[in-house]
Length: 487
Image (cartoon, rainbow, N blue to C red; front, side, top):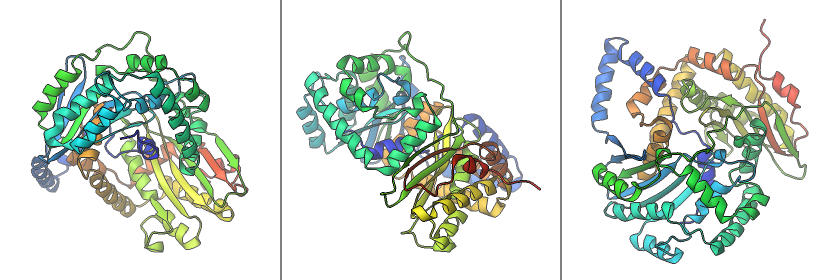
């Protein structure tokens, strides 16, 4: 029941396949439906399949809070609040407040002490959790479907009636400081924080989710209350649920428990601050470390941009690899084949992290000191190949793999609930799977080449690296690897 740690923050950073552009969706579906007789037949088959998929229903309260659910008739359910508020809405002085507030949510309310809350959740056989990302804060519960009313009431209580006691604040201050020490031992987490810091210099996205140590030591109850009154508003919240959840029942519960939430944003509340991307680097050299941890990224598209899907397919083309994988040189990813055959790294993974108006597209790799230069060369070679000579057969394979991963991510009521909550915040609707598959199928090699040229070719990357970095090429040389000389 404690606040989510590394896994929650990493989840907040990952791109989920569902965050797509409604405008581009209409275009893709139109192309899918009208390209001939065989496509029309395929469309009928898709519609037939869609009939068997539970409908995602959406309602809106008078105060602007959205209520959305998918009723699959299960005996369990997941229900949660997705709030459009994260560390990006903070400034230098209060950075860390959103995460601190997430910790305080389970420390007692006006109605329940911390012990009462824990006992009630355990007696229900339920799970209560939360996590904070750079743009969202989430509180959710997983319980039996018959306990949906109690789960919603508990969520409403901790969101609206937390006591935020001084003793609990001081206790959580120590917990968060220990969590920060734990994060420092997770080198992937460290590298991605450095990557954001250098890519979005002196902007809100460049700051960490946990905040600096001095802020954690100085945050007061007034800071927490101020954050709640500024950001926890009806129009910026979604009550999402999946599993055995009748929508009408959920709507009635929302009206009763959340109907009094403020519907207007506080005067003077900061809008989403713009965050410019800067090609730059951060290197922390430590030759005593056994391995180098390196992330290289370019600026990518935001959630609603039409280029999001092509970049997702390109991300799948680069793929990921670990020494524990089977397959070796027979893997579909060209970079994985090279890394395996040449023993160039211990692991690598491509990533496509999106925010509202920007994003990071790149590769994170773990290498020995002697193979860094060669591995970075092949990474950049694959990037340029996406821009110049990727083939239709490779793109077709990546499309199929992306669709498979997309469906595997929706296994269970909790990931479906997360999918609903995030999409509602991004698009005010949930994109149907058949529509998304049609949009993915519309991507061909020419589209990949055009989009990758736009975002990758001859662009200055952001680089973050920790470890024995003597062989990591200097920044100007890395920039020169972002293009091929044309004859």
